[in-house]
Length: 280
Ligand code: ADP
Ligand code: MG
Image (cartoon, rainbow, N blue to C red; front, top):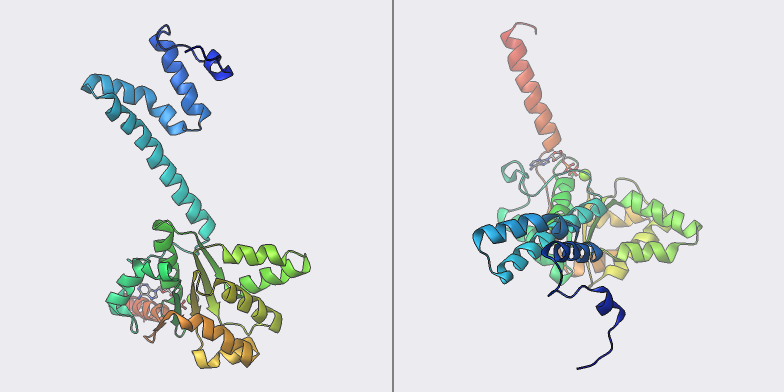
């Protein structure tokens, strides 16, 4: 057939006349052009191995592309971790259930599967300071990032401050879209500080626009009944709670403070050591 040559066809060297070296260079060039940098780097190694081990063409191509896919997955994972803004590396696996009370092993394991994200279920972690609320919230964030979900961790105070600033700068819409984006939004420490009315409205709007679409994990040291006090307006608090609780898992952690427990263990150890050496 006499179809006119296109620009790309004229620049491509016909495979039949090209030397192996120039075909190799072209292949490398294609990989680079397509931004498959890891495959480009791995090309000589994969070709050598293919020849040495007598791989089929299919096998060699599969190896080469799987190198690129693995590297892309790793890049996306670290991108999601960077974006997620998790405060520590705490995971659900290093949460010691024997030292906690109020959360059972099966529930924690179920939450760890991230299935609640598929039904836009919220998780409320309620309890006094030091019982592991932030640890679990961070662990849930960690699990979600690992499972491929876009996740963002913030504190209630930070969310409120950013919304306030956005409103002043005329960027309210952008900020609302930002907080609507992640599949999981973690809001830590609601209730540690009473929120001014405008902050409560910002929080309400964030919760409202995610309602039944995407999940929120929220930690608070105040029982649900006291939310009116935190939010300063009981109607808004009631509406917010309605949406948060409608499809939710509520975990009330009521064990003693793990921080204090650790502190007590350290002082006991110190006491034991110092007693032994008569420094008391
Ligand atoms: P909260 O948010 O409830 O005030 P944190 O999650 O900040 O408490 O916990 C305080 C510290 O104790 C953190 O370093 C956390 O990792 C640790 N911690 C609390 N509970 C546990 C637990 N059950 N297992 C392991 N570490 C825990
Ligand atoms: Mg906390």
